[in-house]
Image (cartoon, rainbow, N blue to C red; front, top):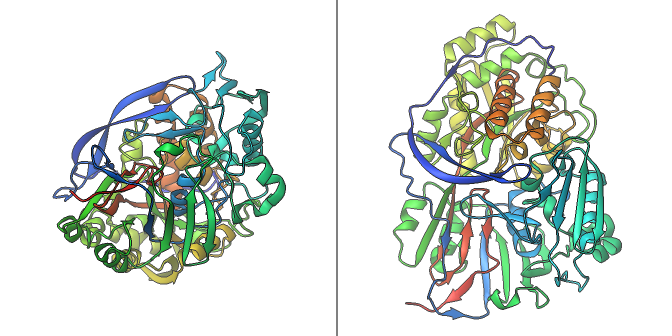
Length: 556
């Protein structure tokens, strides 16, 4: 659990992979840095080229209508400051615009800001120009004071998941109505990327004053749509906001997000026309859907990961100091390494997902300009050595572990395959299926031994690592505590050179792969299906499906 733990020597290997190159842009302190990245895929992959949008083009728009999207899991509370669910980001994308966004190539672009930030020569002052003549859905003016208040809330609200994303801020000041100034105690390169996600979703000051901690029950932001209602475990509805500054380019009357956790039912509803968009298409269904008349499929690689989080010290919940758990799994790093060595990631991806997904061994995608040999290296698959390590540790073999997982069919298929796979390494894995939103609460409370969930990914590796692996991080569900890792990640965030940052993150990952608070397993390929009687749907490498400017179109 700490850097003082004895660590066995980790053996690493790599996957034989085909390589493809895609552009991605990540913003440093004062400028964007472009680079080409390798996309690591296994041989015989059915993956095609990225298809990130179904453009409207010259099709005739049919104004109005209610679009229904099938969501594979229920979002958590609709509060950008505390949320940790990808599915919440889907809904918030239509309601809560950010200071910055990313485009199809991964480049950070202005949204509610008018330009990329200006950063002082010493890297300690970040100045953000705010868009004018914009109002929130309640009619309140957007100004620099509202931006400052949202950022302050991310830093100070109890239970905030944004604090460690924003870096070592010492002050947030509204210089005038159009300008926000953020002051740092040391340079912080990931700030623009952070403000291109939930930390940058600006909240109505009037709604915050009225609703307080209940803001997420009926959020008010700047967006193409505004909140209408939520029926728990059933649906969330938003409607067109006539006050939106770009209302002329919003075509739908409303969007209903319908919770349909079974992938087979999502596909059936799409084929029947009951829904027009469905996320997280099963790899078992994507082939048949692609061949169905009237249905299109978007596909794009992910910057995130799916992993197995092991509870090392999350005793009283995230946000409270970690306390060592007196269990063999939590206290003995060699047992955790043995578990990682028992996982044949490549075989699992092939057998369970038919190579639509890719093996993962770290929180940094090979697509990222911050990828390195260290971050792409994988623990050697060696179940015989794993079993020997368990015997040397003096524990019962097979070693029992209870793993909580989301109760959707694809996840359960993977869990069962993982259960069978690690048995050869001397582990007896018990699967405990849990509803997705409940699983989010379980990991926050620390009420688990092992838990399989993922992260949708961010363009800057700070967003994939610091919150999860730093001492006291807002998403440090394992209760991990390693001063050396903290120092490496903090240093990486304070420099602007891409290669230097990649090296520092790689050093941190080498330690994480020895401590194994999270065992990284695979990366999804975001598969979103849609009816061809709509257009304007987009999905990018951060995993979010964009519907703000979607429309029904006339049949060709």
